[in-house]
Each structure stands twice: as C-alpha cells, then as structure tokens.
Amino acid sequence: MAGLTLAIAALCVASLTVGPAGLTLGEAWSGLATGVGVEGVIVRDIRLPRLILSLTVGASLGFAGAAMQGLLRNPLAEPAIFGAPQAAAFGAVLALYSGFANALSFALPAAAIAGALLSVGALFAIARRGAGLVTLILAGLALSSLAGAATSLAINLSPNPFAVTEIVFWLMGSFEDRSMRHVALAAPFLAASALILMRCGAGYRALTLGEETAASLGVDVARLRRLSVAGVALGVGAGVAVSGAIGFVGLVAPHLSRPLVGADPQKVLAPSALVGAALLTAADVGVRLAPTTTEIKVGVVTALIGAPLFLWLVLARRAALPEQMT
View 1: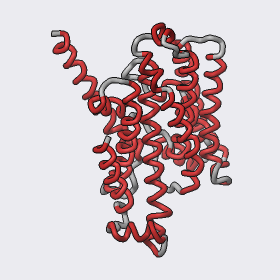
View 2 (view 1 turned 45 degrees about the vertical axis):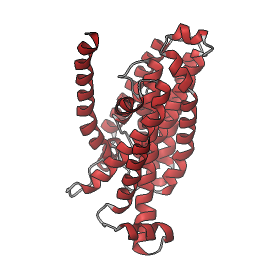
View 3 (view 1 turned 135 degrees about the vertical axis):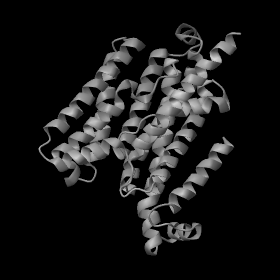
View 4 (view 1 turned 30 degrees about the horizontal axis):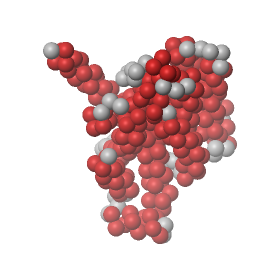
C-alpha cells in the first residue's frame, strides 16, 4: 500500500508537469498555489481536472472490478457485466446526437449518469422478483447488447458527420478538455460508489465459502447483490459520463493487487482502487508524451496495454495450476 501510494504521488507530479507545455516542479507548484499567470491557467484549469478525474475514475473502476470478481467469485468478471457502462455510453451518445451536449455543458455527463441509473433500475426490478445471480447476469448482458446496438444505430442514422466524429472520439475515452465542473458532477457518485462497495467487503469474504454458508453466517446475499450492482453502476456510470468508455482497468487492477495482499476479496478492494488510479493516471500521462500530432485517447492505451497484460496473467495462472496440483 505504501509503494502504491508513492507511485501515485510520483504520477501526480508527472501529470501536473508533463504536456505540450512542459513545466518544472517549481512552476507547477507556483501555478497550483497561486493560479497566477500562464502556469496557473495550465495547472489549475487544464491539468488539475485531468489528474483528479484520472485518479477518481481509475479508483472507481478498480473498486468495481474487485467487487464484481468478489461477488461472482470469478476472476474474469468485470464492471461491464451488468450493462451500466454501455447504458451510460448510450445516454451520452443521445446527448451528442440530439445536440444537447453543445447547448448545455452538463447535458453529456447528466445523460450518461441517467443511462446508467436506468440500467440499474431495470436490474433492480428483476432482482425484486427473486431472480438469482445467473438471471441478473443474463439480464445485464441483454441490456449491454441493447445499449450497444442503440449506440451503433445512433451513429448510423446521424445526419451530421461532425457529430459522428465527436461520438466516435468520445467512445474511445479521454480526459482531454475536462474541467472542474466535470469533477464536481462525478465526485458525489464516485464517492457513493466507493462507500457502498467498501461496505460489501465482508460479504464478499463470506461468499468465498458459498452462498449457503454465507447466508448461515448472517449475510443477506440478495441485499449484497443489490448493493453491489448499485455501487458498480454509480461509479462506472459517473466515470463513463466524464471520461467516455475506458476498458480493462476494472478487469486487470484486481489481478495486479492479489499478489500484494492475497486472495481475500475484502482485502483486495482498496489496493485495486489504488492500482486502478495508478494505471489510468499513467495512461493519461503517457498519451501526452506520445510523439503524435493529435493526442491518443486514453481508452485506446488501456486496451492496448490491458489486453496483452490480461492474456499474460491468464497464461501465467494456467501454467501455475499443474505445479499446484503436484
């Protein structure tokens, strides 16, 4: 935990100093403290919102990934399994498609959060009827497919090529051109998500013994599912609202955390949040260092790094199984 904290501190310094206009540590600190001059505008208005969002959204994705893997007792689970990111993306696409995003500054994030909450509301309606975990997963996959198809339909029917370009770029995920308004809008939902999922940690630990045993220990398994779905939807929906679609962070962060703290689902939650924050902040710093004429989207970087890393983790896990059996 101390090492992760130090790594995040170093990444924070890099995020405030690295960019097209390079700043020294003294210039960055002066601009952050006083807000005066060009340094103040660069640090406070451009880089500080990017840093806060990369940290909080990355932490939320790490929390959500660890929570889903603890709830489902499956290391391949990820936040998108209940359809909240896809529904949030569809809500944001509607705002871009209709033009509300250009008319109102809060239309894009508000529409994304509304899409995620509607998705969760539909799952809650199913859960109240006594549906099991498999039914919830299948319903989430159906909602995810429906939201993805609706997003593709909106892109296909868009009469404005500029709107199509904006939608496609937004779906790639980025922290470019974000402000403190985006931070203020997403922060309450991200904080609520973290509090909800941290409270579920003891339930995830009990679930490692099986649902029946967990219930005998006093865990309300149905309530645990509802809280987990709500926490994941709030965090991931708010993250998608302000940063676009960013994948693989919630899937990889718990795998990188388990060698540090063990396989206890409750102990994995906080380190996964720190790893997610570090990964996303490092990716945001990396896109600014890339020698390209246009900034690479953060979602592209996380996919390029996350997919091979996850394949390596799967192969390493498979290679370790025969040794454990012998």
